[in-house]
Amino acid sequence: MAEIVVDSQVWKFVQTQIVDWWSEDDHNFPWRAPDEEWRLLVTEVLLQRTRAETVADERNVFFARFNSPASLGDASEEEVAEAIYSLGLAWRAKYLRELGAALAKTDGVVPDSTDEIRELPGVGPYVAGAFQALHRNKHASFVDANVVRLLARFFGFEKDGETRRKRWFLKLVEQLFDHDYEPRTFGYALLDFTREICARKAHCSKCPLREQCTFGQNSMSE
Image (cartoon, rainbow, N blue to C red; front, side, top):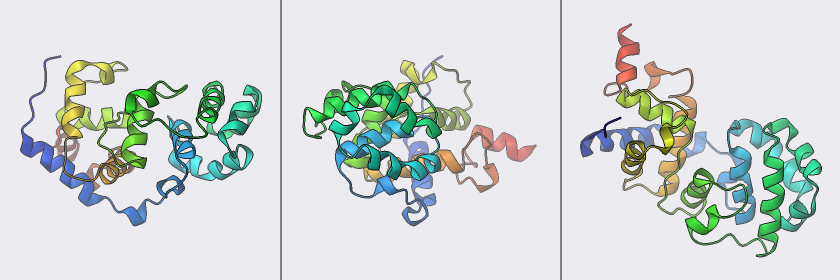
């Protein structure tokens, strides 16, 4: 697909509308408060492809069972799998255990750079970027299926399982995250917006982007 050229004012509209829609008081998950960094990084792994509400219900139980990186790293894969059973994606148990072992070697200290974080077990581009933006308030981008869906609907392009890895799409993501807001504020606003408004079932009538959104304009005209 050819590169999509977007005027800077369009990006400003998207960014501003998403942040203005968001309210910190209405979106108060436990991991959004200050905490030990190793717990926050592990939480981002738990949140992958899992509903935030589900993780919120189980997170305290998980960390009561594994209260240090060493206790997570020393557990068996079966023990970790049992602890995350209600969250699904049992394959994460192996990586969570390995992540705990790796963090135990640094006394729970998470590396400074995004590239170093990505080298940790079970940590890919999304988790590393989300950790830096949301928990360290550093400028970093992150893309999940919800962000892909938002951009595909807004600009009206077809998406597939490989979209997030394509060069033209990554350029769009770079522009989406090029803003003047605090990284943490914009990141949480984007996550909540794509989960609640531009969700699998779109709520276009409530969406502040609909006047410039390809999908929104089509849905409202039907």
